[in-house]
Amino acid sequence: MHSRRQVGERAAQVVDRVIFDMGVDRFVQGTFRLDRHCRPHFSSACVAPGRDGVAVALAHLAECAALTAAAGRDPDPRALRAHTDAVVAGLLREFEARSPRFRALPALPALTIAE
Image 1 (cartoon, rainbow, N blue to C red):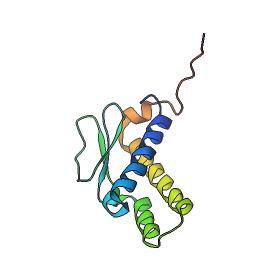
Image 2 (cartoon, rainbow, N blue to C red):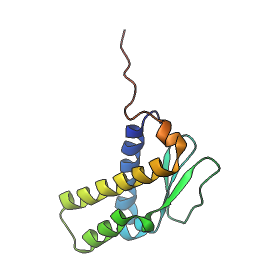
Image 3 (cartoon, rainbow, N blue to C red):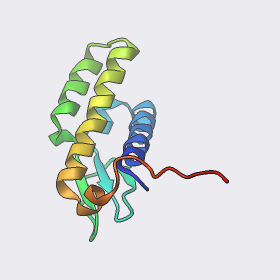
Image 4 (spheres, rainbow, N blue to C red):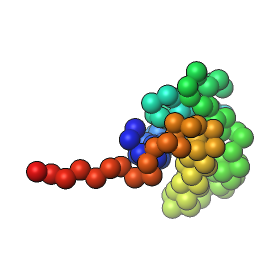
């Protein structure tokens, strides 16, 4: 990954896919890991961080508790989207707090000039 924005976009794709495939309850029981190349990965099991990565147990994120509560009330897709966006923001907050490699990434990808 070349920027924090790209990590966030990829994390959002993974969150959406996992929730679609497994549901909110199984998602919240899993772990998100950021590897040494700053690539986000989901595991349905509790995963320890690698040598150069970090791991975030989703059950410990307040945003996941709100997502679970909202999913239990069967909200409309826009409301659920707001909660999944909050989960991604929470993940990025945790990645920033725990990973020097993530903090070293620029906020936005570098612009390239076409010749």
